[in-house]
Image (cartoon, rainbow, N blue to C red; front, side):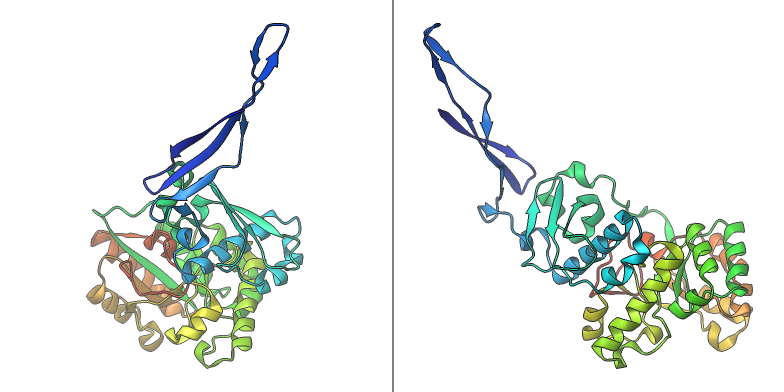
Length: 352
């Protein structure tokens, strides 16, 4: 038997080592050796920096990234379920993965053994393009991440219109018509109780290409709730949104912007704030609303508006026209942040 070690550079940070062996058998009739197929042992991937095999912590840099992967896992389980509505509660309440979870790395995908749960899924295999914001992409095959969400054009200007407290079956529908006419995509931070009342409207928001995000179930101040109350509040909201739209919201905006570290850890979602409050709830005047936006807008701004106020919706056609004239393009929160937002972090604008 002749063995050799074959080394291949996977990336600037990773080498693959494979032990290959050839066994030779003496053929008496021909008086020479004949060689069957080569045998390869399991590949080993070595992180050049440490000289050791890649660990979970090498690949996944922080707790926020672990929580981001948890979100991808939950959506993946629901996507693959034949009857996802039957396991939604189990998915929302399943224990989270940790650095102690058994993970099997290859350059093209990551397999994770899940904590014991009642979803019917014991392990998942994730494509790196789906978890690219949460890993060190220098440790994986570049081919495996080529289809990730593209970054925005640095030579253009962007704003994100965000609408809170809906949906309802009147002004939200009026707003959707305006956005459709002007070919503008926005982000809707929905209350679970409003989604339960108007599931068809929530579905329409999603189906028309807008981003659906969470704004809690009943609009409490989240950092005043106990851990159990907070988990229940968010799970109830996310369940309502999933039942209506078929997707779990990735992002959350806490009511009143009120959040603290403990609450953020319990929620486990990226926290989306705002940096331009249109004050629509206060003025209820389309001209005043637009003046606030006009005076404060900048490239990468997140603008806060409420789709439950008819006066706010009436301000939108002029707002869109004004912003387009200033050279702005409209994007969702996911697009504004290039999909790189993480749990345990809060975002007030594009550059956070």
